[in-house]
Length: 127
Image (cartoon, rainbow, N blue to C red; front, side, top):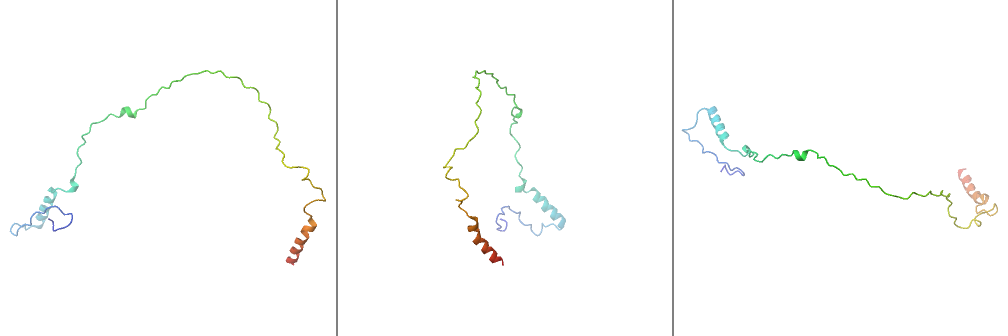
């Protein structure tokens, strides 16, 4: 394992012994880089080649001419009679008209008697 780290499943090469160590640090870096290049990585995935057959879609991409059938049909109808003139609108009468008419003597509102108290209140409050 790789020191017991979670998710680390790659195996590392054994550490070199003291006698086989390279003395040059630049050469050691190059050798380590060369080794890591050859090791597989999960990012080295290449999608498989496209093995599907090519499908001709031109029949579906071109609008087809659709012919419509036109049929002529003749009919026989009666001629229309002239419409009579519409009479003027007169609303229906409701209630009794003669009892609602009033003379000057029988008015329900007498101005002098009804307004005098209101005017007195207004005049006295504004003084």
